Each structure stands twice: as C-alpha cells, then as structure tokens.
Length: 182
Image (cartoon, rainbow, N blue to C red; front, side):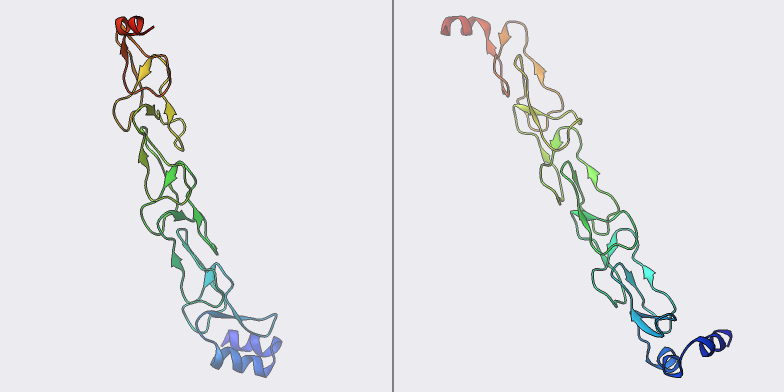
C-alpha cells in the first residue's frame, strides 16, 4: 500500500493503471517517465510488476531491449562483467570450449592459437616450439637444435658430432657428412 500511495502522489492515474494492469515481463516501471519502459540491452526482467531490471551475469549477454532472459555466450567467446550486451571473442593465444565462459583459457606450452574466438589450441608443428611465453605462435627451433615431434616445448640440442645451421630443423646432420658435401 505504501507504494500505491507514493505513486498516487507523483504519478498520473493513467500511469498507475498502466503500472498495475499493463506491465509485462521485460519491462519495468519508470516513475520519472510515468510509465513502463523496456529493459535496456544487458538487462532483463522475467517478472511482471517490477520496478527494476536485473543485469545479465558474467558469461551471459542480452543484445536486445525488453527481454525476459539473458543468453549464454557461445564457445570461443566470453564476458567478464555484468550488464553485457555482447560477448567478446577470446583473444589469440587463448580459447574457450564451453558456453557461458567468464574468461578464456591460455594455450599450454607446446601449443598455440593465432586466431581469435577459438575453441581449442593447436600443437606446434615439427621444427617449431612454444615454451609458453607467447601462446599465439610457435617459434622456429634455433640453429644447432631441432624438433622431430609435434607439440614441442623446448627444442633438442644436436648431439656431439652432429649439427644443423638452419632454423626450424626437424633433424641434425652428421658433421662428417656435412664436410663431405662441401
């Protein structure tokens, strides 16, 4: 009753009728505007007769106005705050393989992801490595080292009597063979 008395003092009779009989889910009563208003993007209202809208929780969004629920962010996207009207794509070097993600997961050592909005990371190819310092790309193994397997974290140093003078090598060459070739 207290609310009804306050509304009668500051609100027109038509607005009071609108408040009690015409309001639907997805709207709230705005006393300054004397009527029902749709919930803005990033908010929702699933009850009738409310004075305020609820904000979308982290991991969800709502891009339209006047809605009764929020939508889960799809895989490869996230929101890390409330009141979101859209989801952000996971940046390169990260991924999200579940819906309603609050943050993206960094690629592990030996893997990378150069694209945004990804749902997984990729193993570094042979001749390349990723020690975790730059998860968006793999680097060539430096000269004097090699990688003969996918997903390498650190390149292997050529054994004594073997060498390779190029980057991105997948094997070392026997030094005796190298001399004969020159």
